[in-house]
Figure 1 (cartoon, rainbow, N blue to C red):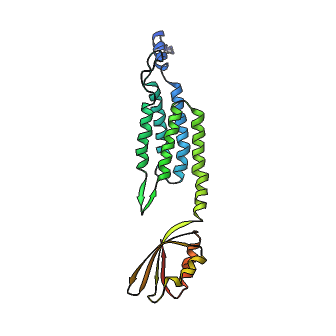
Figure 2 (tube, rainbow, N blue to C red):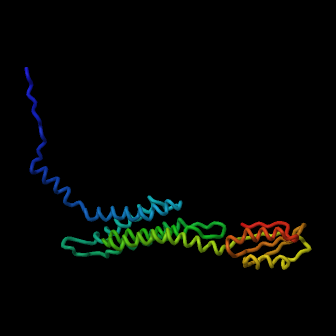
Figure 3 (cartoon, rainbow, N blue to C red):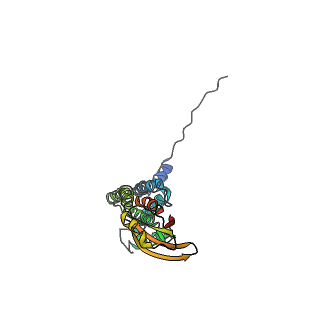
Length: 241
């Protein structure tokens, strides 16, 4: 006995098709496109920060840019009623983003050995939030240009900054000389190596005098300075931080 095979198909009724269309119709495809662009632009900046080993890396910058874009869209649309009648200030939420991201950036700034670090990371967080606000407001061209410029500044100008710092660096030095010697006896060595003395403190110890100096000069000259000082008979030890 043969059993006939009957293929079955699910046929949507007009009522279910209408319900599906009604579900898809309100989806803000333009907003979804802007949020995707925010993820892309935040990721461009975040990749550079991630490769540089900074605390605010890829995911952090993406989330900041994405959240700012969404909040900017809400800030624009939350005060609209039917007929595009505005009943509120379109900048009230966006203004809170600018303030709030400042606290986030402040958390990346740390005090270490008298030197403030993390300012570039804080500034990056702030400008990524601004890019997100631009995307959320629909200014795509401005946001793309800003993201590319920020990436250029963080990469190309980062190399330039390190190159410039190679010509001038401030260090702390400790020089231990014999008790019967004078600092003026070794001062020509500093002039010869083009290293300047910004401040000088001296303490007297049992085996000699200890000078604690703050020096400024070309980075490559400090090794030469230490070598030449150690060749002087007055100098017992030299140490640079």
